[in-house]
Length: 249
Image: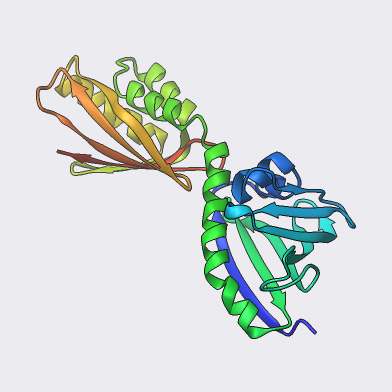
């Protein structure tokens, strides 16, 4: 009997249907397990994972209810630490605020085998969350560029429209001189910056860094000598900016 349980929950900045695709599409499955891994996400379908070093995990899908639940057996082709069919994995996915909560339940018949997998799942689900984020936020650099460009627009209506293309309606912005909420307030503040510092423009400095929907970007203000800094962006699951915090250096 599978009396020993390992459970873990994570929140992913993506829609449930987007998250579930990584359990039904072999190309996406392989992105977070490793090249050559495959899954046939229907009852009786085969699960195959090719780990680094050539270790193989085998399984069979027991249940599949897109986009909320998939259950499959899990074991190793070599029989160590658990043979094929000797454990069961249940993945449950549900909406959580504007993101997704994934819950893992891995059931074993042996406590030592369960304990052996604690760190493995901690690592693997982190890889999974970033793999999903890499797809959802593939255009993040363009979105960040659009944010900086919007700050340089002098016409009020055009500026708010520019912000609306890249930011959510309730976007929040903070720096040492601002605590703002909503597109209109951010756009009005950017217009004031143009009046007090006419001709100033912002641009991204270097490549962005993205981790699970949070983005770090350097920036430079041209037209004001020595004015530069970094911004931290939090993204919505539809790829727009939910909040921005700016640090001048």
